[in-house]
Image 1: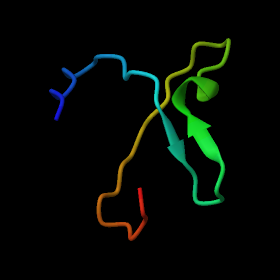
Image 2: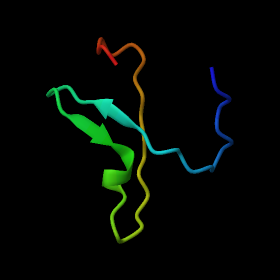
Image 3: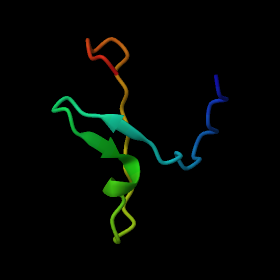
Image 4: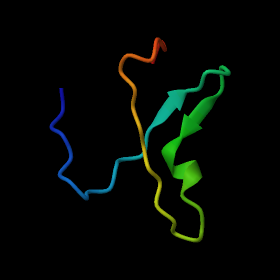
Amino acid sequence: MSEPLPIGAAAPDFTLPSHLGDTETLSSYHGPTGKNVVLFFYPLDWTPV
């Protein structure tokens, strides 16, 4: 298990399966405008991820 990121640190790029069977990569959401991306993880959301 890795160490948690410090508050305010940038998340490393990662790829996960979507509910539609595709893959989603964090870096694909960070466009040229430099806007922030907010991540929410629901550990009890009945999803296989």
